[in-house]
Structure formats: structure tokens, C-alpha cells
Image 1 (cartoon, helix red, strand yellow):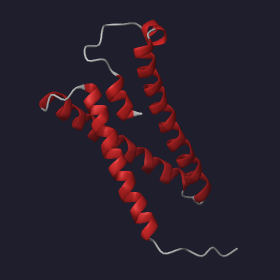
Image 2 (cartoon, helix red, strand yellow; image 1 turned 120 degrees about the vertical axis):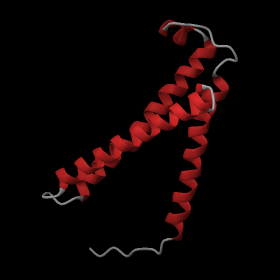
Image 3 (tube, one colour; image 1 turned 90 degrees about the vertical axis):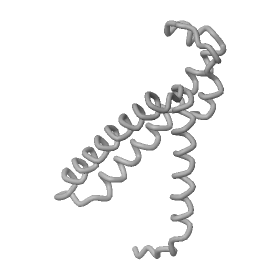
Length: 126
């Protein structure tokens, strides 16, 4: 969705309202991409928290969720600083920033996928 967002934003976007996003076909595509990014984020984070709550022991659950929230906050601060650097110093456009994030996300996904495939199969004892 981030890659498509890069190509969906017009060369010289006009100032608009939320109604423009719903009525103009060009901006409807932008709206679709932004909603898709949000939905995909939710499809990642909600099962992640459900998994954490299901798999952690009761006496450690609150500490693990708190630690995860601290780590998430640190990543948000770092990503904001990187955004300032990329958008401000390197003068990348916002659609270009979304493209960069999407490509980095794809690269991380490939690394995780390869690491996951190289792990030996674990046997599950019932």
C-alpha cells in the first residue's frame, strides 16, 4: 500500500478537504492506500498482543506488556527522528518517505522470512 501510495499521489497535489478524498477518483486511491496501511497495521498488532497475552505466564504478563509498550514508544521516537532527518535534511517528499518505509519493510520481511526458513523444525509434544 505504501508503494502504491507513492504512485497515487498527484505530481502537484491540491489543497483539499476530506470530501475531496471521497469524491475525486485520484484522491480516492490515496484514501484507499491510507486505509489499507491502517488496516494492515491493525492486522499485525492485534494478533501480536493476543499472542503475547496467551503465551505469557499470568505472573509475568503485565511486565511483558509494559516492556513491549516501552519498546514500542522507543521505536516511535526513533522513527519520528528518522522522519525528521529524511523529510527535513534529505528533503524527501512525504510520498517518497512512504515509499522508503515500504521498501525497508519489505527488506526486513525478507530477512525475517529467510531466518524463519533456516530454523530447524521444532517438535511439539502434547
